[in-house]
Each structure stands twice: as C-alpha cells, then as structure tokens.
View (cartoon, rainbow, N blue to C red):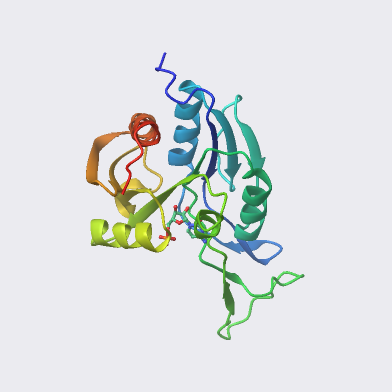
Length: 219
Ligand code: C5P
C-alpha cells in the first residue's frame, strides 16, 4: 500500500484523446491511449484521493473507485470539466485535446469523389488554460508532449497557461507506450522521473504535487 499522501484531496483528471466529428462515421483524433491519465487516476486513488476522471474515447477500463465521465469532443470535455471543477483541490490535464475541430460536422456521410476535399477547422477551447485562469482555480498541472526542444517548449507552456507545474515528455517516446520518462518543471527548476512504467511515473508525479502542496513557495 502507498502512503496516503493525498488523503482528503479531490483530484480531477482529464485523459485520452478527443474525437472531433467530420461526419457520422469519421473524426479527427490523435494517438493518445489514455494510459498516462488512467495511471494517474489509479495512483491518486492508492494515495487516498477522491478522483473524478473525465475521459475521451479509450480502450481502457476506468478504476472502479473513480467517478468517471465519458466524453467524445473537446467541447464536451470542457463542459464536463467545468461542471465538476467546484471543490476540486487539484486539476491534472493529461488529455491530448484536439487543437481543432471541423467547423461544421456534416449531418450525412460525406460521399467519396476524386476531387480534393477541403475541411474548414475551428480552433478548440484550451481546457487547461480556461480552468487555470479562474479565480477559484485548483492547483493546475499540465502535460507537454513535444517532438523537440522539450524543456524550452514545456516551460513556455507552463508560463503561458500560468501553471505551478508541468510534466514534459517526448511525444514519440510516450504516446501509446506502457513506459516513458517525465521531466517535471516548476518554479524551482526541473526534476527527472527516469524511464519507468506509467504507474510508477504517476506515483512520482503525485508525490511531487503532494510535496508542493505541503510546502508552498512564497515569492
Ligand atoms: O499547448 P499544448 O496543447 O501542448 O498544452 C498541453 C497541455 O494543455 C496538456 O496539459 C493538455 O491537456 C492541455 N490542453 C487542454 N486543452 C486544449 C489543448 C491542450 O486542456 N485544447
């Protein structure tokens, strides 16, 4: 059993990809498996937290002790997060939210032709930035999957979205994989969680969060 570092804490976690409908049978999505977010949900339950999991479409079994809300699109994910955010102590945004959606989903299946097809995309809301900007924002944690300049890009996101903590990894080494490594970036600097199963990384991340909540840095 794990030390109950998160006893009495309420944690909201987003996980998985989103699907943005093109027509009734097609969607824009990405390669997120949901494994990292689901591992964090499991580890948080082990540490005594009360977990709400807002999940995009994944092939994983949600932990029975989590309250799980299943959503499909980014707009549905934002609505589910907003309606569950009150009273949360921690928000960990692990979902790989699609940055764009087809501006209008076709009601009927788009017929195939040899002519080029143009889709107009509208940008999706940034769920994490929206929550972090609230006056009653919980402790907000982001994820940054990058293909290059990992630390610089992740730190830029942490500052832009006004997050106390961001977890960064190389996208190709993490998406869909069972193991990964993570670099945690906060006001104190960087902290490496070396290559390990995602449940191990999840425990390390949550220990770091618990320590930050126990010892707030006064600036
Ligand atoms: O800017 P970027 O999308 O790389 O930032 C990644 C972080 O922002 C992740 O924590 C992700 O869950 C969150 N995010 C979000 N809504 C979006 C895009 C990203 O919550 N539309």
